[in-house]
Image (cartoon, rainbow, N blue to C red; front, side, top):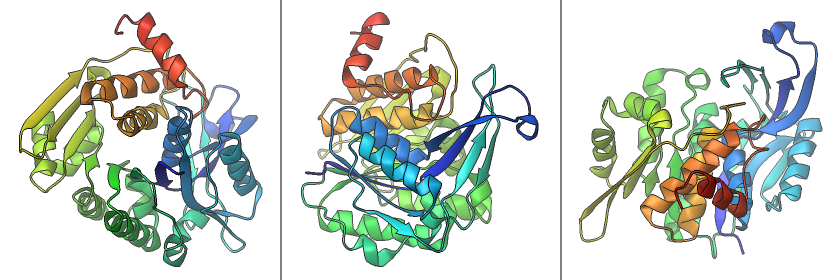
Length: 320
């Protein structure tokens, strides 16, 4: 039975096999990417039952994505195939600092034309968490409406909703619209998880406590902020209106190969922890560990660890 539902835009991914500007690279390896897909893979590797909702094209990338979902034991029954629209893809370079250049080809992708009618076929029985990202809402009006519709369905089934804003300014018509719609979605969710930069953009605040209060005052139950090199932070209001705060120092990877996907790894760790009813600090600790381990690997999701690998990593850092 499905524990976690995720929705988003999966993409094909070409990773450079040599250094240099993307326009100079002659050889690429082929993989798959997508923020919410990364979260789905990360949570599935902890042994949870995950279903992924999206639309891909009837093309090579679409077939790669479906095959990968099956390999990761992720339910793909809600992954529809369009004969009209193509799957988006991206290019990613190599970088010594782990911050590679990227180039996206996703405008008008199959995921941007996701159907609301098909969302009504999603079975929420037994689902514990619906995880949303902000990218789908920014891709198109259909993606925005699909996000709101899934929130409505989750509320009807009393399913907890987690949300990662995943700001991508280039896919929005304007920064103003990005902030307005992202915050509109956020206030409808239970747990909001921006990184420190996104929190500043969305709330206009510089302090993590003020960022958290911005959303808690609007009815959000918990705000978790990935502060990257400064660790992570959680602020939650319980049913008795008592405030609970936790901070987790940064867990440094042994080496940094690729930072892309580390934020999604953090979210996957937190969400898997919530599925297992871990306390707030343990959720932050797991999220930090997953993000750090992912940075040690090339690709957006290949390094996402199992529970045993996270335990070994935390043990090596002396935190368990």
